[in-house]
Length: 137
Image (cartoon, rainbow, N blue to C red; front, side, top):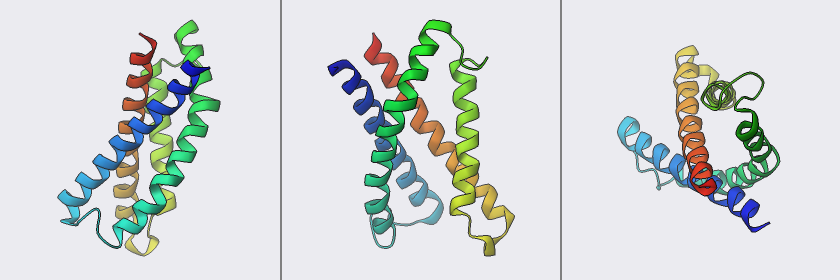
């Protein structure tokens, strides 16, 4: 059980930390903002606990069973780990874009937010799966 607990908690936490660093860097580079000042701090205070709970739940119930299947069969639904992760990141990136899209700013905003979502999910899953692989060794 300790192993499953570690494989649930560590990859999720490391992935979320990597996403926070990515979003803070993006905020500084693109918006010349202070990622930890208002109103962004309010977003982070909501973002961190919410995503942590979602990530831990997703990791325990979905990621770990798929990880075990990937270890045995090398494919999930006919896709390798890299292909499956890419499709997942694209899908979640578009959903992220649709959820956080400010419609008054047009479709360019949708594209930018979707690309940002794709990048953050790619960072999360890269760190998450890399950590899982390291824990397996």
